[in-house]
Structures are given as structure tokens and as C-alpha cells.
Length: 245
Image (cartoon, rainbow, N blue to C red):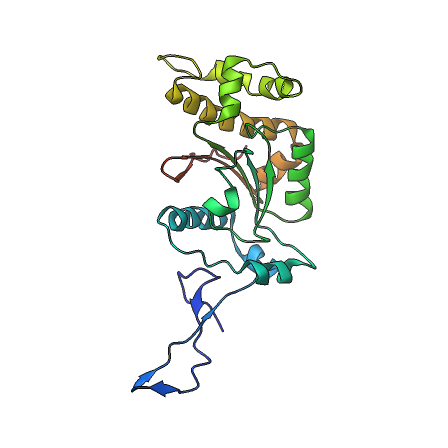
């Protein structure tokens, strides 16, 4: 049975199963049927722009408080022997910004890497190369968020064990952020401006340090995108997409 146009693949009315039953003169409603994990055919049919639109639509459902249509157990079972994620995400470890939840994504939909300040290191770059070149993901999304503690730490030049080196990777975003107001971690407008710049610089860093990713983007096979998640409004703001080089 085909899915009606404009309806999410995991939530469509099933026409079968009514069996002509009538109660008090009214036919019983058709039950909801939930599709399981993303299949290779479904993933391969989608363009990078369509994948990004699914993320945007999922965030709209989340922030409106709509009940999720995900059947996680069905997805777990369907993906146990194989996975076909459509995208790879790089986001912050902040507990308030779980990417799959805030964009209403299910098991098997995306690869997700998380590290404080959503910066890219060699291990993450290698993971992205696997996700795109080997596994077939079509989108690389870097997502920062408002009021980010890692950004504050970088602004304040915090020194703490291994965290010191991680925050040093964010410092270029602090220096590159054009801002005329108070440039301190106490000024949340500045913190958020740095977080946005950090997303932009991370995308540039991925392109520069991964010829594999840059090559796939240049061919139009994948798309790189950035986003900022607002902890207060629950909105994921997608940054303008830079043209592939």
C-alpha cells in the first residue's frame, strides 16, 4: 500500500482491516499502521534537501507538542540486522539538546556524534567519512545550541584537565565573532553568537580536514548544513546552506 502524499512515513491511515464492521451505524475507524526503521530504498529515494526538510518538519512537531509517531521497538527490530541512516549529526553533549528527540527522528534514521561544543576531531571526521562514503548518509548536520556551557568555558578560557584542549578548539570562534557588546560568558547574546560562529567554523573545518567529505559534497552526493537549537523556544534554526565548492 502506498503512503498518501504529505504524510510522514511513520504515520498514515491504513485502509485495510476495517472488515466492514459497523457499530451503532458507524464503521469502526481504520487503525494506525507504523512503518519500521528507514529502509535502503526509502533513504536512497530522498535527496539531501528532502532529508533536511524531514528534520525541520520533525522539529515543528516537537515544538508544537505533538505526540511522536515513532514505534521504537518496531524500529529496533527492523534495524537489528542492517541500518540505512539518512544523515550524520554532530551535536553537543548537553542533556537538554538530544538531536533525535527534538527533530522527532527514530532508531536507524541518523548517525549521531556528540561532544561538548560540537567540535570535530579526527575520530569524528573518520566517523563522518564512514557514515557518508561507506554507509550512504546524505547529510552532515552540525548543531550547536543556546546557552552552551562549552562555549562559556571557551570564552572564560577555563583550564581543567583534558577539557582545556577541547575548549581550545572553540577559541577561534570566540575570536572570530563580531560583537560590539559585552564579550563575556555572562552575556548570553554573546555566548549564542559565538555558538553560531562555532557551527560555521566547524563546517569549514570538516571541509578542510576531510577531502572525502568535501569531495562528496562537491559531487552533490551529500550536503553539509548547520543549525542552532534554542533551549527556550525548542526551535531548531537551520543556518543558510553554503554552496558546495
